[in-house]
Length: 185
Image (tube, rainbow, N blue to C red; front, side):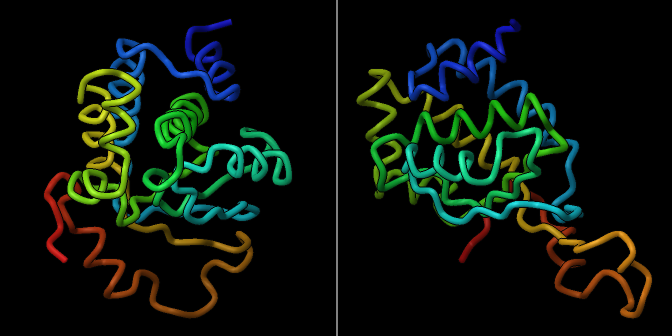
């Protein structure tokens, strides 16, 4: 069993990783995410999951109902952290699955994937409480910068090419954003 597979199994039991493992996982994820475009196509069938907000056991239920990754293709719509008690384990499990199965799990940046929001709604405090320093928070929030903004969902391959001019103006605008720059709202 590889280190990554062991970490996935550990995280599935809601057991935290060592700080050094979090750093290494985030560096691996960064290598994958930097290659992805801001708007990327996700083919159906795909299971779409909304705000998890650190509700680890709700996320486990999603996998129980939807099927394990990589058998099931997943699209997570952001807001992985804050509010719940297990934001660290929730986000790191999703990130580890992204590293292990990069083409089967897609993570989109939500409004809670920002340094400012996480300092108000709990992720910062959770990292400090669980690890005794802000390092894990920094590693994770650095990853947030690499998460894409949107996805272009294609229902079925046979529906391509039938009408429409392709990329919309809004998709073009999003695709040209610099992900590593903070967006002012």
